[in-house]
Image (cartoon, rainbow, N blue to C red; front, side):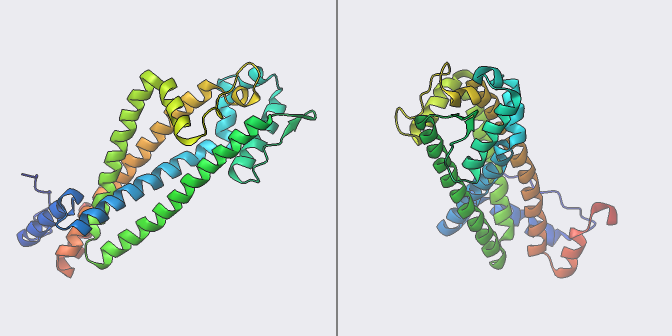
Length: 270
């Protein structure tokens, strides 16, 4: 039997406490009473997870992070560039990746940094990012619609609970993926590229190809670790916030106006 949520007896009547308890139980997306409610809860959880991942990725597309990580992985030495040339080349590649147009035709001392096969791969990378952020935009709109719809139907607590549940699932998924990657990152990295890029288009020689000198293997392994940590932290914060909103909304939905006002006040004000 699920534990009864703690509701201060001094602020909410036993009748309302029972209502809050049942609301908290039915707010769990796994306990939704109809198929549409289960679908809505699942869609809310998945949409929230996609949005959190998209937000977490953004800092890693900035010159600040890329420059920091290139310094750690000695990209300038690998590419044979000065720090100024390295920054100029990298910033141009990032600009084309994020903002476009996807020419990737930057040159250093009149010599193109990337060969055509490398530029083609970067155009493929930009296509993957564009597709993911299109999906994230759709997920964000869907999330707003689902939460607003749940509020109109008087089930706002279920929406917030579904978001919190989605975040817990995301945390578990990232931890599992992290454990697998820690013992088989090469295989995971290879599988990722096979899933999203044409065969043979992503294999480069670190002795001669600038792309993997500017962004060496260690660059990606370390970035992946930090990205996983950022996703887990964001998901944990959203999970805590979503859970609190679910409980507060359940109180407001099930209490009379006077009782809801008392229950919503901070503990120090009661």
